[in-house]
Image (tube, rainbow, N blue to C red; front, side, top):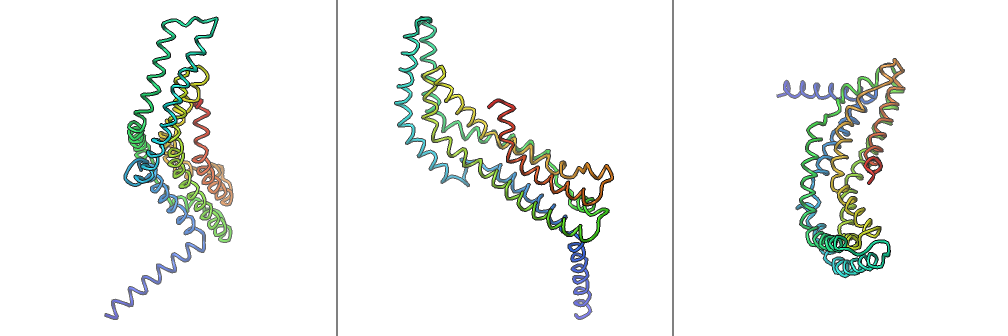
Length: 287
């Protein structure tokens, strides 16, 4: 029994010494930071893959539905008011006669507004499911961060003290960046829960046509954007490991300290890119 225990303890103690050396040299800190980053990517894909109207958030969705039913009491009279406003606006326009085609367009807008209000809570969960299926495409294309290769590159050509300081700094930056990314993904749920109850008020403006209807069109674009935002976030997460692993300064023969600094900046860039992806897409698609 003693012959079995002693070698086991010696083996465990030697492993502990090796790990301690890695951490003190900074290499272990870089590997730990890379593992945390990889685990966070998995958590983020799990968060984005949750249906906001599904079982996990069933109570929150029920609250949203109740609020929607309250606001629809306001929305129905508003549809009538905006329809009358649009009719009077076109009827008194001297330069454009109120022809049959214009009247038909008015009633089409009225029907469209009422249909959207009646069917929105039935269609939105389907849109959620479609967005999650599109997210699966980006998840299949994603890769994990090679933590060992990352650590080897980061500690190359640098002294022990520099490696340890930058390793600790890299770990702290990764922790903050991961928390920011999780916060960004969770914030999407709240944005949708805020927007959906306001649908009756925003969509009622469609009955008026003209400039007044721009509120309704802007609302539709906003809801569709926040619904399918998971795809944009998935694209950022898919390219993140490859982006962090590619070191420009390492190819130019720069010092190890410069390479470590580049890695820290890239982690911050990914977190900022995930947070700012909303602005980028809105500007590029004119949303």
